[in-house]
Image 1 (cartoon, helix red, strand yellow):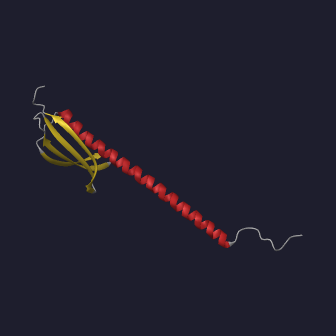
Image 2 (cartoon, rainbow, N blue to C red; image 1 turned 90 degrees about the vertical axis):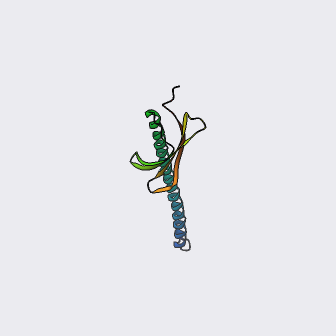
Image 3 (cartoon, rainbow, N blue to C red; image 1 turned 180 degrees about the vertical axis):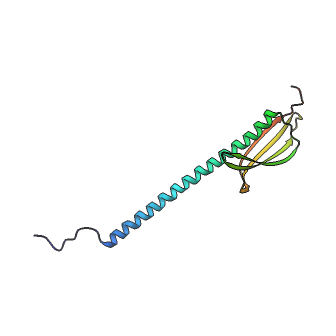
Length: 128
């Protein structure tokens, strides 16, 4: 004989509470995934910016450049992304060296520096 007073299954209220909990958990998981993606994109951009700065200094070293003091700007493409570089060349206490400070920015935001490299060039006209 079946007892008609017993109910099996969930009530509508219990199902709605369970769905709300699942929705909150999925929202938190999506937020975490988005933060991870944003962090990976930021890391990639900063790495590429560092390579741009290193390429600028390595190119000047390889060519034996001796730039005049002042500030120079330009753009360079690295892995399909365009970066703006700004070099500040200054003298040092030793006339043999020039200090080169290279700042890298995205093309869309030249106020937010992605990377900075400071290096020194040796005067190619002075015999060692």
